[in-house]
Length: 121
Length: 338
Image (cartoon, chains in turn yellow, cyan):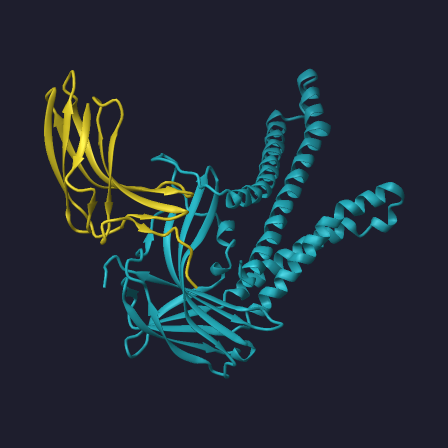
């Protein structure tokens, strides 16, 4: 079992995202890539940007590996009716059955900006 | 409730869409028919004769060249026909998508990146205005609308001439045809006549729009931060007498482009609207000041290949018995709270 733990689920622009990868498996998962990314969701075609990438090695059957990314000033997380933007950390590697993702929020107020309301006149 | 100018724009776009679809399908079918006719009546018998009874008069290379040429036309015709039919159905799919209450959600995918289609860019009236940004001697940022209607009028007018000439040539001998064939010929030609008249109407509409005034907006700087207020100046230059009422708004829109294969569909939705100016009884050289404020906690401007958060200053002037004035000025909202 592998999981990504984050110190906080909501981070402000420019701050650091700290977390730890914890795993316990029958065999060492081996080399993997940890990516910091954002992607869009909604009506439009998905856009993805990998902001930072780190090559790591999970060379034991169990353990914990801390990580830290410095976050950019933008784009902020938001949620609209047509478009939403989500931030995440992804762990992928040949020893993992499927990529593992953990979502978090990047924004000045610690929550996604809500664009779903009706516009005021 | 959709504003009137948007409705007119959508109608104009609908006429253009039907025109392009009909033109593409018509020319495609003509190409397919001509190529199939040539293959059946000339090329296939020539091949049969060459293979069964070779003669030095017939060159295989020339025959192969003609065959390839006919096949090329056939393929081109099929492609044009398919393109025309798809254009019609893509319009229906778009409307169905708008009516769908829940928006499709997809995870991370590998869909190829592609910009919006050329036709899609005409689907919103906001796209007819071109903005030029410059600096005033006092250091202010000056946004000025340009008259794009004239270019549109010339392009649509030329196409309308071509379209109507073809329709005229096809229908001019109808009175000479008697009986049922003449009636069917006329009925078949009627939709093409309607489209031709529609194209001429769009040309006139665009020509009238070309005579509208230029809108100028002055800003203290190029961008604004959420929670900040800027004082802006606005003015109309040339032909402002026709404008009865003027409205200026700050608008925030989420824009999404859904690209599938060679098609793309663009949708936008308003999430913020604030009135900056509402004036009637304008003088010959109307101008004024307004407070531009982006609310605290608002989303900053954002743009990725298929998705966008767009902030704009929208200007709409009502001109009775004339084409309304419209101009849209993009502004940048910084990702930095005030």
